[in-house]
Amino acid sequence: MLKRFLFFELRLLTKNTFMRTFLLLLSISFMASCANRAVYKSPDQDETTIRSIAVLPLKITQTGHRARTETEESIKKANDEWGYVFQSSLHSYLLKQTSRNNRGQLVAFQAIQKTNAILKEQNLAITDLYDRKPEDLAKLLGVDAVLMTTLDTDKNFSDNVAYGMKAGRILLGAAKSPVNVPSVNSSDINMNSYLYDANDSKLLWKTYRSGGADMPYNVDGQIEYFSNWIAKKLPYRS
Picture 1 (cartoon, rainbow, N blue to C red):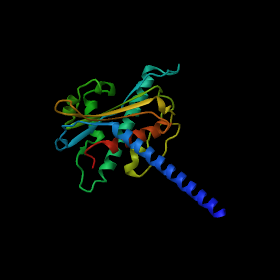
Picture 2 (picture 1 turned 120 degrees about the vertical axis):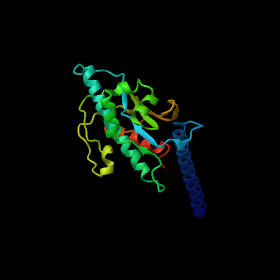
Picture 3 (picture 1 turned 90 degrees about the vertical axis):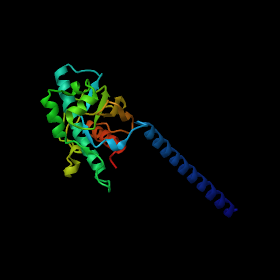
Picture 4 (picture 1 turned 45 degrees about the horizontal axis):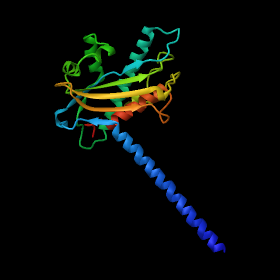
C-alpha cells in the first residue's frame, strides 16, 4: 500500500514539474515572439551601404497634467536635457554592443559631440530636428543614416531632474546612481526608434516598445532600459 502511494505521489510530482516547465517555456517563447514583432526591417535593405550612423537626441512629447509651478519653458528645458542624456546613453549602449563583435566594427557611430556641435551651428533644437527630412539631417551630419527616437508620456520630467546618468558612462566603468530621479508610470510611456537612409529618407529599420509592469518606474532606469532595447535590436552592430 505504501509503495503504491509513493509511486502515485512520484508520478503526480513528475507531472506537475513537467507542466510547470512546459508553461515556463511557452511563456518565454511567447515573449520572444512579441519582441521579434516589435521590430521592422526593410526587406530590400542592403546593409553594406550603411557605414556611418548619427544618433540624434530623443524627442519627448507629453500630454500629462502640468503643475502650477511649471511653465512651457521649464518643461521644454527638462525634456531637452533628458533628450541629450538619452542620446548619450543610447550611444554608449550601441558602442558596447559593437565591441562584442569579433569581426570588428561594421558601422561607425558618429561621436555625439560632433553631432551636437553641427546641429548647434545650424541653430537646430530637438523639436526642429524632428520636423526636418531625415535625409537632410543625414547629409548635414555627413552620415549614411540617422537614428531618431521619440518618447510619448503623460509625465512631466521637469521635477527634480537629475544628471550624470550611469547608463551614459558605462564605457568609463564609473557607474554612479543619480539622486532625486523622478518616477514615471511606465504604463503611460511609448517609445519608437527609427533608422532612416541618407539618400531618400527611406525607413530602414524601426523598433517600438509600449510601457508595461515589467519596466523600471524611474526615469534613470527607463532610459537605460530603452537604450539597451534599441541597441540589442539595431542591425549593423554585430
